[in-house]
Image (cartoon, rainbow, N blue to C red; front, top):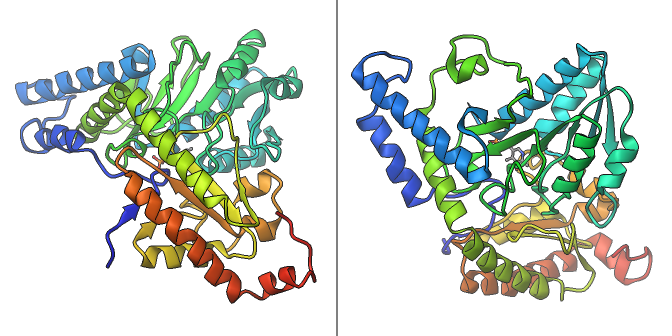
Length: 397
Ligand SMILES: *Cc1c(COP(=O)(O)O)cnc(C)c1O
């Protein structure tokens, strides 16, 4: 097989050597339970305290505002349910979100709607973003929570979190943001960004899978989803995943230390990819062109089926995605691309390339060379493309 070119970093990332090295110690030497009173346990507890402080420092939080979870999905579930039920106790049952959130948010909101909550899903428009003004316009007297992602995992739009936070502060509404694609990739600071709750996941920044955290600002009540022991100050029961937490701390420190350098490198590769791939006729870049993650490219090719494109690219060693990993496997087009107003047939032909600092210019040039060939081949065997070319149906892009 050809050398693997991994450009699916929004789905997950390869672990960094630093993170792996940090973890090994906690399987072999520091194996204690942080709740144990003996020496082995207390050494583990010290490591837990250290990791919490390191992680907090990376986002401008205080250590006791960090709650470790099993990842981004759990953090989203806990934040949203906690704020919703907390609001309900005060007679508030309205929530504001967007139509292109991750399923960890959307499916939690759907469940809450079944329980009697009312949710406004803000439209994201064809340019792939929302404004703080639109959030403000949706606020009702009974709004308990605004949950808006920091950056979109499929199309890379970076949302105006700081401004949305200001609006929420002014109206005394809890503001949660799913920052899984942002933390470790772009500057995030919970104070400057005016957020009350923030979700994060280690495996999106070269840390281990199955571990993440929820930031919850001091003074904002947090309800627990998992009953059991008194871990995480009674907010999340279960023996701490100390190796994972330490790996996450190491990966996040590394990511934040190299943030500027990595952003610059990725943005240059991103722009090279965009320039190269949008030369293909009847293609379209999706997502916000200006406020965009440095590592995201998302392009639709008309007359092409995304899944076929992926499989043919995979055969050439290029690992990409046609949407979020959670939606691949189903034949429905991505809810994110539909939220951007793309017609079904166009949304079906999408390709997401998500970079990391491990990617090289040679890899990018190989992609720029290969994708147009595959698109051309798929169009040559596509009955839809034939109709488009004969003018029997109009081009949509
Ligand atoms: C990956 C991702 C999640 C889920 O995180 P897990 O740790 O895999 O549960 C949530 N939100 C966004 C935006 C993501 O990209």
